[in-house]
Length: 269
Length: 344
Ligand code: SF4
Ligand code: SF4
Ligand code: SF4
Ligand code: SF4
Ligand code: SF4
Image (cartoon, rainbow over all chains, first blue to last red; front, side):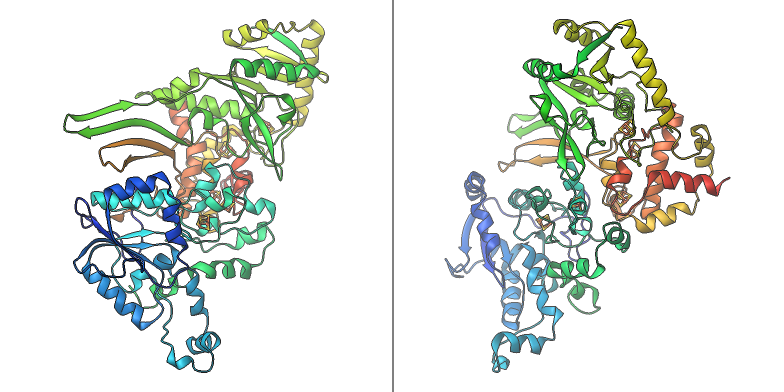
């Protein structure tokens, strides 16, 4: 497999997790839908639970473990100063950190906040007393601390959770596929959404979900984030299928707004 | 070998009898003028008039994902077991362009080191061709490469004679099947009707790009630095669709995956595409075909130049799939015409 061009790549030698590793889950700004995916693992979940030792799961065990963590899963994006500090503290105690889900990996839908002026959006959400409520532009986890593994997707794709867990247990780097979703969609022999007259973000979005949405009759919403070298020439696609360019751009901003943090010099990583 | 006859109203019985002997797959409509080979058990599920399927029948010879090896490592040491999965299958309704594609793959996978997974599976596939007497659509270029006519590579081959099909029997397996089903031999009048159908076809199928096929090697010999690739490269979105749907593309990726016990695992091969950014990237992040234009050029050379030296034939069957599927309107016939115009 080939290496993903994520700003914070899994290092060639990812830190190796211990034999029965101590694992913790923390959430930040998210819908917690990705945690739900863990329960969708079914029997595989029991196997995973046999291989790890969960010391904290969300608020359930509430940060009582006072030693280091072998593996932490971070769900959610970072949207205020308090969250940044909390994340840095967790990172300092974690041997391996996994960004879990679109919000953590790319900022996810929370990134839409960055399409507005911060104070305007604060006022809109919190009302006239908004200054009392801490808020910062949305960041993905790697834009605050170093990330060892990425599990993309909104929600995460269960077979990929398993793959990443196995890589982490073996101390091997995991490579997020950097081909477009079309590559999997074609192998699944779906009728292309464009043939149905609907715009789909598959050509610009990282594969790895086995074209999950298209298999189920939806378009790809771009939840796994943009491929590292997307084609700039969407123009032909747009004209071939008589679409409006803004349409694609707007659809893209739903999940990919935080990418701009990576591109602004001095911001993020 | 012999020619036999199947009346059209008997197709359903034919498919049903065949389905009792083995799995039968045939083109099936998926809506929006898209078709795919899928399992059928009766004739009414089959799209007899169809535009080439999304994926060519190569998916039965070389599955999109295929387990090729199982391994385990424990205190006793390391063991491995090769895996070949196959199923007795009849592929009904294969057009001549796709028969040509299968011939190309047969050559590739018979080369040493032989690909036993492919070759074993091939022995369990029964191929029933179906002739096109008119074009599937405007993207076809099968006459350019002479794959609009049957050229072997099948067990049985059906040609429409109005209220019946005349069936050319090409193998012993095919002979056994039609004899077993008691299909009558074709009469002299049927053979004359076949001749007539072919003569009419010659009037319909003409070189689709107005450039003779024998000029293509010369054109490609001068095309390495052509500007055409830049135009194509600027439009391409690297979706890989053009190669995934191509009946003669065979590149794959291999990956080992280990179970949660961290001791047992399997090796899987999956179709890959030279159009992907990652395809020609090697350790140290060096990429031998970094630009989309280089990758597109490679694809065309892989169809019209390299295989000529190695196998003495084009590896384009003119099926038109790459053009139909391209997200960016990159059109094979147009690209060939542009290249030809540049050097004339
Ligand atoms: S449906 Fe979407 S993902 Fe599938 S081939 Fe079409 S554009 Fe690509
Ligand atoms: S198809 Fe697109 S939106 Fe759906 S899971 Fe995959 S990347 Fe996400
Ligand atoms: S290059 Fe295009 S037209 Fe030629 S065989 Fe491949 S898919 Fe068909
Ligand atoms: S490309 Fe030619 S042989 Fe193939 S389906 Fe079309 S008309 Fe038939
Ligand atoms: S199908 Fe078109 S856009 Fe996709 S890789 Fe091929 S040439 Fe490029």
